[in-house]
Image: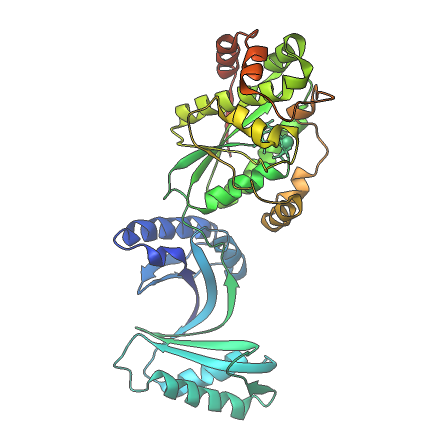
Length: 381
Ligand code: ATP
Ligand code: MG
């Protein structure tokens, strides 16, 4: 008999002929997540098994962050030939629990002498006899004892939820525009959850924004990289561009023009990085630069698809996710962002694309962009 983790996967089930590809990626991700705890990871019979790790609890919470994992069961594996021993172990696992329970048997070994209803009845009865504090409730039990009869017998009561989604790397790669705010890390998380490998680009305006502001963004990237399996961050010097916009362009268009430069440079970084799309944390109407017209104006300068997973989300919903994934606290640190430098007093909210283009035309965009690209610093987190 031994204790192990039984990892269940979610949506990959739906993948017909491609399933082996997704499963291979998922096993690799689980193996990577468990590597600090030693042990063995293998795929068998529709489950991923993790055994002999140094710290079961810590290892399970790491695996819970792997996209593609539906849930993790704390299981006991034993020989299936002694049904008495299985019953004793079941009682052992239920002994300290209170309230109501149900036994849920599943037999993938159809030659096993007892069928599932018989297993449920036998084990349930033994538990009732020896754990006086427990009652049966078939419909809404407090605890479910799962009994899986496979090559071995697996028993488990405790299950923790995984992150859902698809294994990172199975659905291409995208470039996240990562600010120090609350929204963009959440946007990156949601797209990574769909199996997309993420790189990030951050614009900083030293000395108007401090080194601590840059560190904050790298900290956010580090938290994200726990889910996204490592992130390459492109840090772009943006001061010169902002100064020129401030000096030469009409104030009410300055934020929009700045955002257009961000999008163009992000697209260049995506090309360098072979990313197939851009990701932003924008949400309709959140600020002046996120009205329909403003979004159209910034979208117009890039040809890659732009993913905005938060487009229909309220700030409170976004904060809820940020808290759950652990980015909220860092995002809330009060360091300045380049967007807050030279903020116009009255930004246009319904820009006309040709007016913005005209306002921008006094700048040598090509020259400014190639200078910024030449100053990029790359940090792997
Ligand atoms: P966030 O909380 O993500 O900062 P926000 O509500 O402050 O969002 P804006 O400042 O208008 O919104 O930025 C909109 C989006 O533009 C951000 O979600 C992010 O994707 C991108 N962005 C803004 N500032 C930067 C930056 N300094 N570097 C990289 N991307 C940025
Ligand atoms: Mg911001």
